[in-house]
Amino acid sequence: QVQLVESGGGLVQPGGSLRLSCTASGNIFSISVMDWYRQAPGKQRELVAGITRGGMTNYADSVKGRFTISRERYNTVYLQMNNLKPDDTAVYYCKAEPGSHWGQGTQVTVSS
Image 1 (cartoon, helix red, strand yellow):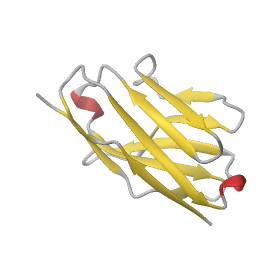
Image 2: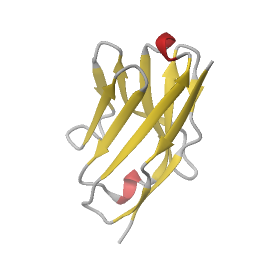
Image 3: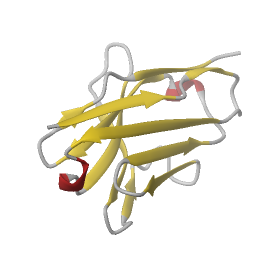
Image 4: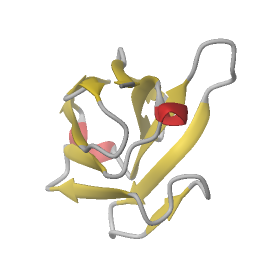
């Protein structure tokens, strides 16, 4: 079993930056892919970025060039978010595969 804990969310002005962290515990050596998802009010949860154990990354078109995902050792993943926009406001969730393990989410609010 894998447990995930996110941190780093908060309130930021448009154009600002935040860095989210997700730390896994438990059977961390089973994790192959770690993803960041987000869900805005009234919208479906969507994939923001993902990273494999080997370091391959993928991003949603809406965040390319602004967000960077990185991974440290087997159990920590970061999401550096720059030039934030009001449309980035959402609860951000960390996910680990295989097994579809989810964290509890962290709120990001972009507002002036």
